[in-house]
Image (tube, rainbow, N blue to C red; front, top):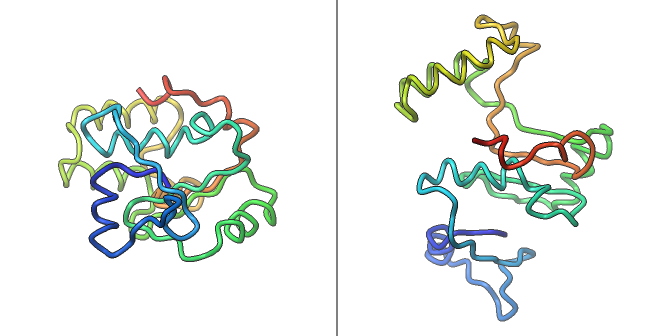
Length: 164
């Protein structure tokens, strides 16, 4: 489990303390320092999308948003979402928004990022073939709160420069 100081402090306050080997439950705690961005939303994208680069010797990875808790055996999750379906990648559906356009509007409403930057990114998606009005069944919006993937195949083509 890779944590920054803030997240570790929250876990400690909740009574989750590493044992003498540095584990909390099944998870070895590793403190990450020298984070690449001041904005934690951007820093969180690095392990979320590039876990295959951070852990090249790992066969699988699971990424969970900080609001999620893993309550099952990780291998059962890998089996269900990847092995049984013969998939390389699984990601959770968004609980409320069902299209990229709805996500764009919500990000603007919440002032998550500069509106011009949001428009520029969405215009890029449109120029790449994503329609503004979408058929939900074909272009669903994914929350990204849970992501599971096999470290092989097309995913290995992504690199750090793809996030800038």
